[in-house]
Length: 343
Image 1 (cartoon, rainbow, N blue to C red):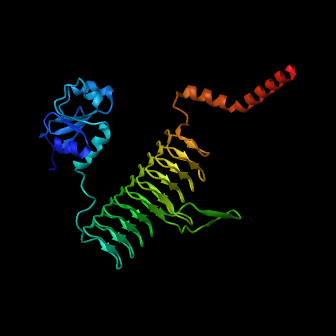
Image 2: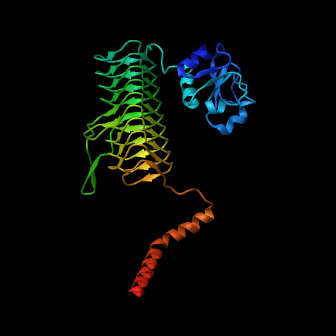
Image 3: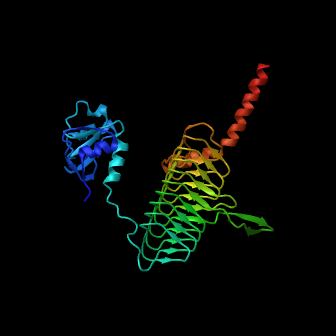
């Protein structure tokens, strides 16, 4: 079992200990669920009332919340939530996707394996692949020809990495993800569809996490690129030739159409749809269920979508929506009449 003293945790996150610096911490928890060997956090002052009843051994607190607080053991730090994430990483008990190399794993000739690589049952690694140090690959994962995976990356079970794709260092790819399938490229001719070979790659930077059952299509000619530090949730669709810049977060069930470009530090809410061939600048926050059909050139918060309502209200508003064009024409006619009368 991993354990640290409160002083060691404070030094790790850059905080100040209040109380017993030698208190041993073995896990993390919420204010409501944590026990005497766990550390909790308070990131929102609205929950400060829970401190009095919490059984947590220690709490991560901001200097403001630490004032007039009766908490005996604490780490005082400006950003308790970020500090909690760092502590949780230290005390993480999640197993690796694989340990050691299973007898059923198949590694083709010409594969370069780094040191301390782990391969689960029935992993297949095709010729020309390069696997970095400390990489762990879960059972039934397929690594295609020419794929490269950087140091310390974790590939969970049932992942499919198509040929020549690149995965950076310290990445996590969850089960069911498909990286490098063909983009949706077709040319019409006489009512039929002609397939356009997708000869680009998927290039994923360092410290990227990709959620379960997410698909990232390879580029048609150039590459689909996901830059360093991006986090992509479950069941997202990233189409061919998309470019996502550093540290952008994309929530579940979002669709990015082909050749769109997303800037740095953007946050895209769940079930959003981004049109193809448009750009979104840095530091944009898009609310869930948004439909983005034109470029966004100014940082800020953007929203669309129709909030849920009662069926009766929805039908009434739907009927009025169909009358919108007629209403617009009537208003324009009235405006013209008023203008003519004033001349």
